[in-house]
Length: 446
Ligand SMILES: [Zn+2]
Image (tube, rainbow, N blue to C red):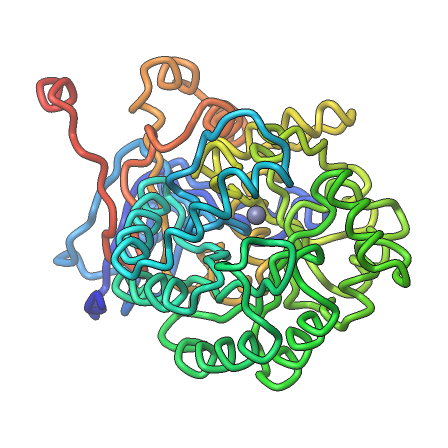
């Protein structure tokens, strides 16, 4: 594990963070300092504000890491992603159920091999960091060792990460099935080993209602009851054939949402990926349960699943995060997924403001994962996970953002045009975990 840096660290640059949901708190929700300082001690934020105000408060001999005009933001949050699907990103030509059969299940089956699973976990964590993502809510595979290896890799970087083993006991290849008894014992063992260890959290993870029997959903609910504080993470209402099949498999339930509701899987620590085809009644009940939705824009477009109804979700006050949903998603970058989210919302005659988008990618994503008391902003006492964005890393984005007068003027082109190319560095509790390589051209220019 990374050693904690105990002395005060000062980081200077353009500084932006949200302290609330702009739909609720309005202008006050954003803190933006064109010349700001982030002060960190022992991995936690001690102050964040304007350089003019803060620079005199600390002894002059404390070194300052000066990022110049680069933008320091809280680490990006990926609310739904599959660690075992990194190498099937951009697999051609199928919709959800066929895509699972043709690409996802064979790739997950390869994770039976311990060494393959180990390399896969390492690749996945490195991709998160390369994209400025410091926290993720992660699906693995049915194999307990895949969860073990991912947790070990995240622990080695001291990341705040939620994961678990997948539960599947039907409608998938035999080699990927467990059963209710084994899903209980494997999950319980992993929870005891990993939940609340360092910055890690465990999520009970039935893949979706199609691949879990009623008995297995019952086991999932029992795990939630018996192990206080664990998360629940699954898929919900992603595409129409899936939704129809769920109704056929659970004829006594009134719809897809009701399957999870009926089996005791709804609640404030439950995260449902997609929710594309929920009706108003389902949105209302999901919101009332305190559950959240991980919206997966690039995945929904790539698989042709449908367009998330941001307007309806907003009316019901549902907590939303942004999920890359790799490997059906087409980019690990939360920024790139914000760009797709904006376009999807436009097709529903809704405009996601730059501040709202920034919120969804940081503090809102943390709230969707019930982590907004620890990460997602730079309030004193919060964990100092942050990402440094360099709009100048892309020549056109540099031109487009030069002279930006407000945060929104700066961040909108950043989220529409940005991706891993503009990640300068990624920091976990004040420790650098990724730094962009310097290109020969940049070296010559500097
Ligand atoms: Zn998914």
